[in-house]
Length: 575
View 1 (cartoon, rainbow, N blue to C red):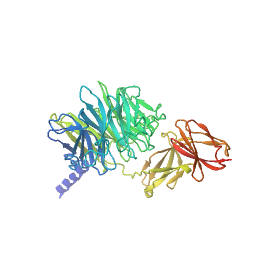
View 2 (view 1 turned 180 degrees about the horizontal axis):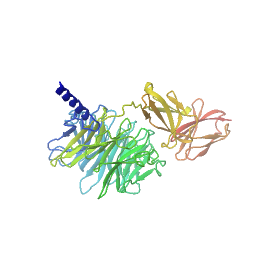
View 3 (view 1 turned 45 degrees about the vertical axis):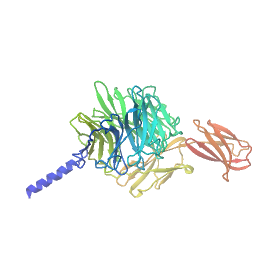
């Protein structure tokens, strides 16, 4: 019996060891590694995304037919356990060629719509001697075939200069598609409608160009809860960020006149990826290179574009991987997962310190092959919290797709995310979903004037709160929830503008004077009687204006003031 006991004990210990966070998942492929090699093929993966059903979409470029030396947009699909999904495309693989005039076509980013359709973007390089680059946006149906309802045969081409490249793509809740990239050395941000046409309400006919007064590349884009758009990238030496209002106008309240510039390492800093925390803070990952030194870093910014000094050291946390970093994601407990080119996965606490319980001092590197060419560009966190890295490997004969999966854990305290549903216009308040009320011990309403510095304004017991004295101008609101087991989480952020609008005289006979309007946009003014009939309309473009009401019949009226950031209703009496 004694030998049996020893063997069983050792076996149990081995299982526990294999399941430690940061170790390769032995239930995935061979010792945590899956490779896909196809005959007469050349395949490279540059991004990945998880579908709602757990399947994994990988995108990049490649070709399958040996005689065809041109590269097309590549999409592959795997089950959550690393088995190639033969129901997708042609036995799990789709290659889309944008057009005959392009020599090389490559997907750099992917997003999955709620209906299962798949959006890809990247670049297409024309044949020499005309070495022009364009940005294709491609949409596939859930089965991997091009979606004919999008653009022309599932393809839209953006051509604004000699060097157009799409590096990131995200989806808005309303289904609009945002693409971030570079055009002739500038940031370019594009927004498309669901059918593939440019959104004319955004920027200049659907596009926004930010020059940064130099050669700049936009690499990533994220959407705030209030609809503002954050774009990140780099120029020849520094990290760059900018933010746009929902209509594409630069948000001058961000950084310095809408721009943030940082050179952390005194080398050539580059931004690779970005993610927004639930509290609105901005987390970027990047790397820097010189002839003598390589380094990688995480940096965190407040919502106003200033560095968050509570993160790492003065807003910066260094990574040990010197071969480059690719992606960053957040777990639901606020911890941070990053991926590195050499199939390196790292985990950081929410304050920027390495999670020493993960791998070796917070990091794990997997030698996928003996070749030095092992590149992990994609990162996914699966529903069971396991971490999936995707990329490709070169074994000096051919390129093939590689995936690695790692054991992982999250804070066992229950994290409860509450969503603010709407703004109560007449009551200066917010209302939120209350689905997990039995697990919440307290609500705290926090308010900010800049979206970065918060103060508590109320501790309601119901699912709504009325602010008795909102700030004049911008007001940001969020909820802090504390669960019964002590976990703290934050809701989305809602932004409203409180305009202290005054009308005089009231009652008025001929002229109604209005003060406190928005000076940055045209304001629509409508006079409505109490039966709901529109009696008069005007447009104001300054802080105050006079409205001639001499033609109105005596009585009570409503003054509807529509500004870019809200609607205000005032009552007045015509004598």
